[in-house]
Length: 268
Image 1 (cartoon, rainbow, N blue to C red):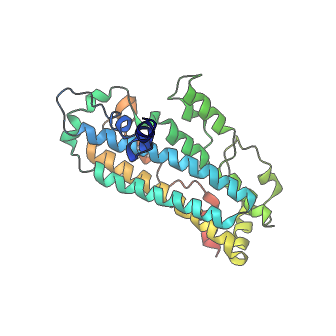
Image 2: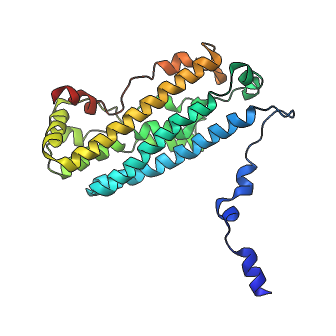
Image 3: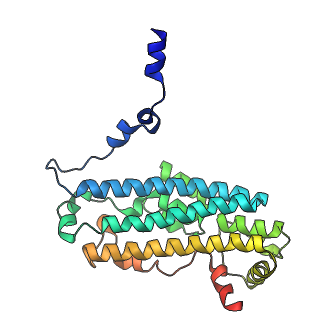
């Protein structure tokens, strides 16, 4: 009897991944069924899982950078870069849904909007955004509001990178290292000079910096594909939840999160 009980309690693929619970989370709002709503839900749930993973990886990357562990940091940042490539490729799947197909269930989204993704907002913060407007979509005092408020007061991955470079004796300006992390980072000529020296004289640090460029470029690529996907699906209509849709999303394009790494390119 005990052996049978143990076998029943043994971990299986289904229990470890929690497959039944996972598959129960897709609940289209149409009793129809409506064919394309399931795809829409699965894609966005998958995005949220990748956002969760990215946040997890950036916490680890920040710790490794502050320890000066270049090789482990490179591996972790490389994983983040690959996840961004996956985020971009998922747009291809979403674009198989035509405007007419999306229109069959769009009204069921009501006030729901991607602007309400607390994890993506937190990801923006980790990558350097310092803007209280990220809180606007969340009820004051809610768990998401508190989490984002706390994130706005914590160092981001760029702060961790500057600490890493300083640890390797690159001359990062003291005022930059001691700057209030709650304030938006501003490109700094002194930081750019230190970056240039790192690129020229510190091959290990240069690899870390290039991995961050990969991540920055990956985020910009995902934003661009997201804008074009929205445009081809709803044109210039307002988005769900009262957002301005593609019009707003277009304003986020070509804004690097690590501007010093781009400014320094013209100095090589």
